[in-house]
Image 1 (cartoon, rainbow, N blue to C red):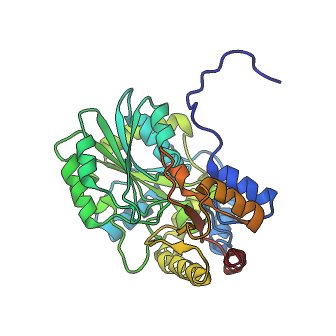
Image 2 (cartoon, helix red, strand yellow; image 1 turned 90 degrees about the vertical axis):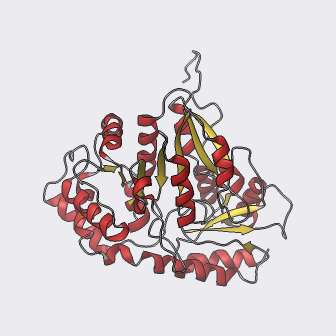
Length: 384
């Protein structure tokens, strides 16, 4: 069956997501999947029991559009404890169907035709398409290789009266880099006395290593008053398949965001919200995640130390970049396919995160896997 009329694609440059492509190849060739960013270990039995408990108690119909108030209250308490900032759970916190939905909703709510949105490459692949669907213009700025830091002088030159949003991501996917207090000060200076809004993707806020503190824009009052911050329950509680997140913003920005949110999903999963609310009563359920994932990173690096891959610094997220230039001169997209088919390990080529497909001979490995999976993957990679 086929539609024979004219279709004018709104995303004519977009195909199937690289994450779907590489995960599909992992299945087809029976490869170990270190590509798509999801844990393969068990989640908390307590959290599963809580979801079941609230299902059995009858919490199976629509939640309030912004989310159940008890969960928003737990989030407000967490924000004040961690970042010394106060958000009103009634008017400034919204529960969403995942972090990606929150990002998309914010962009659709705030970006108008020909508005410019500054995006730092390599960037998560949903950012630019969401801007284009809103009629906006993505303005790409390359992070400085190999440390993936922002040159704020480059940003300053690009800011103009059409600049509507600056999108940041810390800890950063795919590089694992983190933004510093100096970065936040520079961002604050650039946006002051302007109408620019900051959209801060902080879904890996708890996955940060080596004693560093997460520099949320919420820590900086002048930034917080112009920022929408996006978080993910999936990344924090290893429940990516539940597709649950939230965003925090001042009331006037939240009002606009909710106007779009109500017509996209209306509300997020009800029993899961109740379960998270109760689970978050114990802060230990989210405060030890940094140590857990640092162990995963360190173990993976120890397994790979005698390989021909060279690791880049990783201060956050659950992704490790590896330089394969001593192994092959192939483009990263070609090498990733070869690695999957011939060596049985699926990864993500980093060039796909750039508008201009910069190839630094890097692959992204997800280490949010059980030790046995990491060991099996390393055994295959050490043979190369």
